[in-house]
Image 1 (cartoon, rainbow, N blue to C red):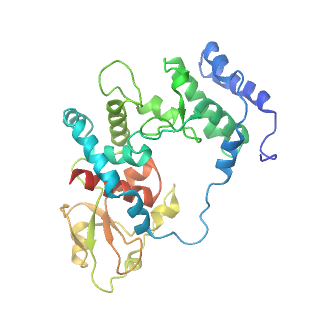
Image 2 (image 1 turned 45 degrees about the horizontal axis):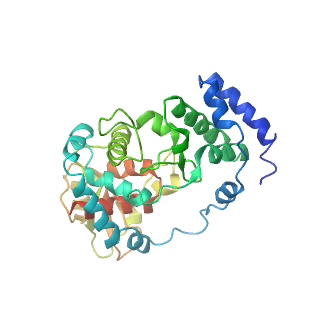
Image 3 (image 1 turned 135 degrees about the vertical axis):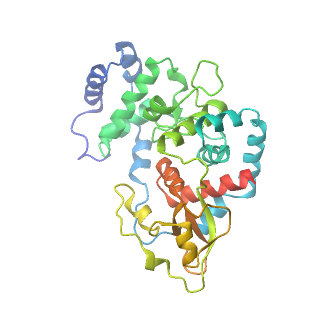
Length: 317
């Protein structure tokens, strides 16, 4: 454990959390049932402190895509898509997000529900908050978890990843409170239900600004000797700076065409896009739209967002 981060014992800190939860309107019964008997989970601390850093240059994208957009996950995605086909048009109409994107998120996060994590969420979040590296974040998520219980979510169902995400779409508790929806009309919002999970991901994407009718991106052909770095962005993103810094300047597709960059799939000439050639000259290039940035809001990683977009394309094919 990081001794410098813990300024008080775990049990004393839980009393502080209880006070903050009480202030935020959590019921006394829920505070007691959630926090009583909790102990820190050393495995969670070990996993948190062993997360890879950002030393060196980014690894190549192609091997990651080969692992995460293989024939097995594509076939499972198409099968799930077909099994829910009757309800998908209504979800697409309501949220204006393509179902293929929703299924790609579900597939990437939990392999269509085959692994959702078995860590007790309250214990994980309490441990991460006490550890102190990101105390404000995880204390807030622990209090959000208690608010979920106050809403009637059974404490026994609240299991997930070591970092506090749960359900088929791996929402954090605060995201559940804000954006999870009842997709099948049974009066419950259950992220271990396929219909609720898909509708909730759609609601997340609508809230994040998904633009109806635009692709997330398309493959592009670039002229021999085309130097993407000559069009490097001059903007500095307020979040995930290194991820966004790898993308070019924004130009309309028509402007990219005039520079010799040819989209290899339908995309409007007026759409604003950046050029991304992650593995360098002579390797696949892409025109990425604002909808790609929406995927990045779900998980700010070019590897994640590219694999989600490409998986969605394959599921819809």
